[in-house]
Image: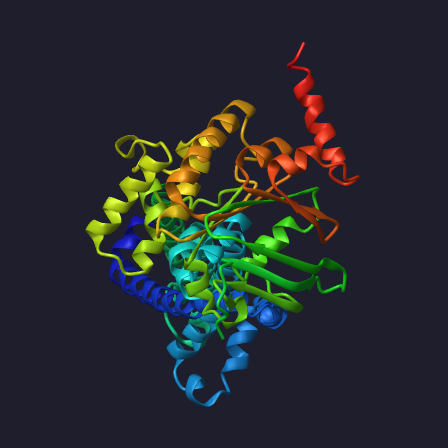
Length: 210
Length: 255
């Protein structure tokens, strides 16, 4: 085992970095898309069924199938990383959109009523009241989405986007447990660390918000 | 369109119904004078709160018109209208992520007041509601008792110095001792503040104590408007039950 790590150390680091890059880019994009989408849902309840429904449906598509489905698309299918990131963003959307919506609509009715009756505009209410109070719930969504994304990103290797999945698929082909673990252990660690780190951030925010 | 009017708030033939078509308010005509405290008294569901919500355009009448300072609420810029009117409710609705100070400063800040002016005003209104700023300004709402929350709610409503105050059973959830204390203080505040106050209550004692006039609401209609003394002496079949209920609670005290 140690010998394996010694021989493949460089590769483990490279693939971990690739993996991390895929996850970070995807999560940044997912948050940038998901939080505004969640906010839109609170302002246009009619779209709720459509948007939550479709993000839900995406979640049920097996990841390999989703990669396959995106492959023929013109701009996306050309490069494996674009395709992977698109798929990862799509998977990450549901928890983020849903938690943004739930967090904002979960703000106490009297708080909302007071804010409106005092003469806050919808935008002021969003920035000063709703988003700060919804942040812990939104962060929970981001946390869940991050862990999912770290897991799903291993499949990206199947279409040549790199990441720790390389080891896993190679190990499966070679029937070599060491190689599989070289991919699986760093991925699991990454998920644990991300979960723990985001949990800490959440606690800090929670304390500040009361 | 502005009417010349000595009334701060006027309801003219106002009807309000919910989506299902049920009328919550019908044929409401009522004028509120500057500087008075008008108590909307009635049972739950009689339309008192609906009246309040029509004044700051949280609701809009289906028929008729509600005028604030002579202008129909629908012709006001709604944000301007609401910042012109203080609002305090039973649930208070303090912002839990803001300190007392920040809660009170919300509207002055949004109105673009200078920092120093805001700070002075926060101190001033905290003093008005009887909370020493040094002790309370930095606290969060969950570090306050029910009575203190209610005081902060009132301070917040007063912050931008609005000429009109709407109060929806603001003391309803307090224990009787705290309630009596706040009522007494509020009574002396009324004179100092010189604001037009519309106050919703189902507590006859509170209505008699704090009102200039009592507007009795009965299932979505205004039954009548009375001076406190007039209310006590009325033989009206709708007024009597309130007075009787009130007397029963008083009799226990008199041997």
